[in-house]
Amino acid sequence: MSLKGRRLSHGTRKFIIMATSIAASSAASNVFASTPQFTRPTFLMCPPEWYGVDYVLNPWMAGNVHRSSRDLAFAQWKGMHNVLRSVADVRLLHPEPGCPDMVFVAHSALIHNGVAALSSFNPQQRRAETAYLRRWLISQGFLLWETPRETPFEGEGDVAFNDDGTSLWAAHGVRTCRAAHRHVADAWHVPVTSLHLSDPRFYHLDTCFTPLASPTGEGTGYILYYPKAFDAASNAAIENAYPANRRIAVSELDATHMACCALNLGRTVFTGEITRELATRLFDAGFDVVQLELSEFIKGGGGAKSLALRLSDLPITHNRLGLLPIS
Image 1 (cartoon, rainbow, N blue to C red):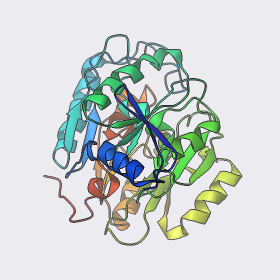
Image 2 (cartoon, rainbow, N blue to C red):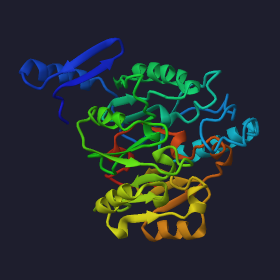
Image 3 (tube, rainbow, N blue to C red):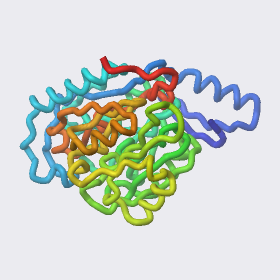
Image 4 (tube, rainbow, N blue to C red):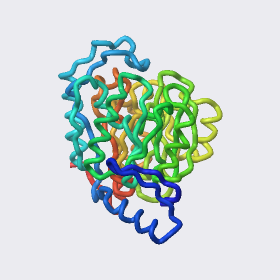
């Protein structure tokens, strides 16, 4: 990973890392040696202790204000937590009062190689969440990549790595500005492809687009996506990157049940309730599909992927050295 011109923070310390001298290289090694090292797929989740649809930030919330059940949401969250723990380590972020959307913890950052690009929420109602996650990440030894306040960016909601972590996909058009894409990609010095969201229902990239690892660990990965969420130029970019046999386009019915907001670990795909047709297509591609009841979180505009923030690097997450079965 290139470190030239990197500006990172580690707690209250800030580093400008220039790979132009032995001293700088040594400093960089010391900094990155302190970042967390995971040997198993590892995620961060936040219990829905304060969850509720208390306002409208996206079309999914409209019509559902004060209509969510915290008890049912907790039962559904616990179900996902238990299943995910069967194949991964799951850390917990303490929920805070006044932050009902904190359960969607994946919107708060994007993490790769021990570096966390923190979100800069545009909605005032979600801005307090960043401080709580920042404190937790610092305590765990992550390096932080800050996003300017004037540059809206919402973590894994807006940006996704391809299956091997060598490039980024990023969306704009509803809540995130395109200027954020290059800034976030600079955290890892990787190329980024910008996609334009044209359907307001799909306000985040993770609601309509999720890269999937090759279930065999060989060859290129797949893309699970809803083409009608994007404009023509964006669909052309997706088709250019993924051959037809690696594109799994979902129906509007599946898209509106957050099928694309899926969490992927190697050959396993965790998602909400989907049609038999889509489940069969995923199975035929070599994936094991775990369907979860997440109706209370769909009311808030989220799905499986938004409820768990990936902490481990992608090769570990996808268990390239041997895929883990679900117990």
